[in-house]
Image (cartoon, rainbow, N blue to C red; front, side):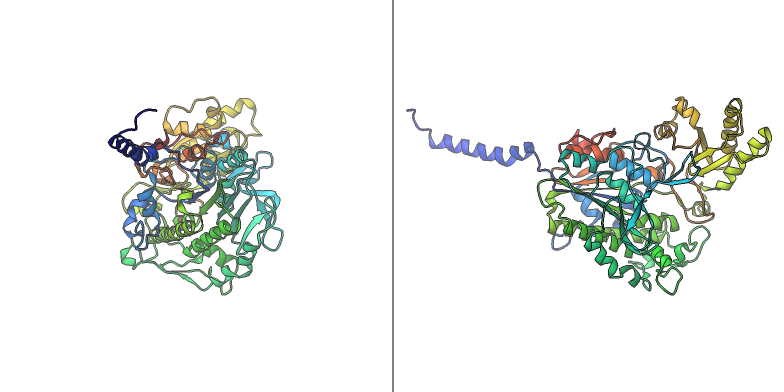
Length: 559
């Protein structure tokens, strides 16, 4: 038997072991997988809102140590300040599909919120499904489903990875936001139906849960009929305050009234579809949305075991407000502050219900928005409106001069124009396409007009914008001519009313991307990324294969 070690040597070994355990161990230890992934998509939320309105956000944590909203995420999360969409157009359906699948439109198939059915000529709504009915309201109203998604989502991948044991639930104001974020294999998607004032799902997902039915039966949406959206702060505190009606800005969307505060009665004396529609423009709908999100987490038992679940939250109200009043309005300032407060309440709920150490929070947006054109013009900046009628007229006139008077435009769903060349010979079609392209590009405010025939031939790959459109082309759904407006110009279907998004310019593509969770290194990251990187990043954290079709990259702190 050897001699016992001196006491000093043993002490040194013990100190070394303690040092390794305290300092080296945590560096190499694998963080636990989250029990719940919460994917929050704030509709029409520009990245610059986080800076412009930060002085009015809640502190990162309050005196009791409870989390705040955006500043809590900024302090304790990975914040990617250079996150840009790289598809075209930047509309709600396309953005939600890109985030959930990690793919471009050429793969996931969602080329727009709406497109034309080439066989029937009818309008296709990306969320609506004629084979489904709404569940949760009276009458036989058409339901929604994710069946137009052509690629699996992160929720689908989680289901595959766990043998179907993962729970996937979504809630949003808009149907397309809920169904596209969750995917085909989701347990349930819920959304608010403004025709009836009810929270609904569709027959695709089965019956409405009792806890949702109880909310509907409480008549919560009807009780808000006489309420008013009042500013959270004194009006003097808001950016770009405007107290009087101005063309293009306060155009009385949903009968909200021309000045702030705004009434929620929809211009009617009794609750009904008009007041329910007005509700979707208000902070009251934010409160209703997050209340429903909390009910889902509690009643569905999300995050209660070691098998990760997914919850998606589509914060659609911000898009309604932004369209009506523009990104530099006091209303957008106010709804952003209201979102900050609702997020804080939601994070505190998750902390008490599950524990934030077991929750992975990912926050982003589906797109930004252009300034109201009249606001841009008053400030001597570029910008304007392009009328769909002007586009149709330009194409029809150019082609009628050469081929005879006729209607050559079959449909237009910005930015996709569909031709009707059935009366032309195959030899005439190429000439007609070039004439249409030239006619549209001569319209003030149009940057490019790209032909689908050229995209299929690989001819539109010279500029970043051309490459973006080419990567977003899906045969059978995309238009015959894709129209790209100049910076801060919009295609306006409600001229002169509000503003829009959809372009590839930074006011529409630059969005926040924030990730907070156990093992995620907090800090500000400046390497350019895209929301398509979310799906593979979540997959890496969960140690599983990303959704098939995903071609996003890992965010830089995982590389």
